[in-house]
Image (cartoon, one colour):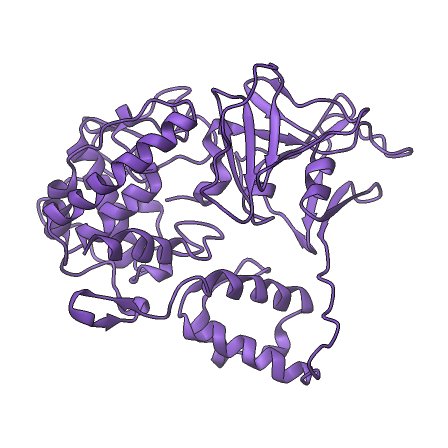
Length: 436
């Protein structure tokens, strides 16, 4: 199970330095002190073992995921050209090659970021790219402040300028009710600021007065993301299906030929992308038949599980912390920190899964074992049942899942991936539906 979505991992482990060249006067903080991060009114919570903010030589440093996840940007590190690419608009934008200056270049929405003199240059430390976040934050229309009393970094997005001739304002409660109704249509999981995970369809049964202004603002941002996807999935022949009705368990609708034909069609684009990133292109493995076969043995939709693997592995290019030789297709136990080799298998077969010191995520003995672990993990989310008779446990996190908590794909949002606003929608619309 993943605690945070792919964007957080940014598996090359880039970290951004907060843009205080030194802490403000009177803000001396001892090394090891707890530093808080607050973005648009929400205090970030870091899981055990996750990289947390820290003081390094009088400066506050924070994990890159505050940019990738909580500030709505997509961040890529291009090793060959030593470029940090931050995209808020065109998520597929990759810059052209650059000169051999040797310095790290930061590009935001296609424009090179100029770091003012005195803020310091981007640098590599302990294998991580460090840049001043104040400069990046302000370039992304954000304000960065330091509250010395609470040792909190406060990041605030700029407030949009109101239109010249605004429409007459609606009563606040009417606006809120419309927001809640529209969110409910999607029947997608959401994570509330108090940590609860709910299905948006349940909002209609809740007292809207219990939600704070901060929560309503967050709801608006959730709705903006959800609107990127239609309310129905169009199937061959013109039929449509509501995504909330697509269960994790069920019969696959795609054939192995259709699934691999889709990947073959995407291969030239992915190859070009890898070349621009300075990475070697990995040939697409033939795994579709295995996903269908093993998925059927568990009653799991192997075709959609396959495209979840395509999403998680970046078309099997493994540009993150999990590597192709691990046969780990859904990032099991990839929590952002390398394993110690002391992790518990929790009853999983030691002949088929293991951990290795310094390696991110579990290591499976074969593609078949890795796929079965993936299917078992989905099985744990979808049903309270024991494994089918005769099956051997391969998933080391199977016992850690709250069984049956997510019987549909949309209910994986905010659980398999956090916050994962459109995690499942992406699997269904951006991959699976395109393969028909």
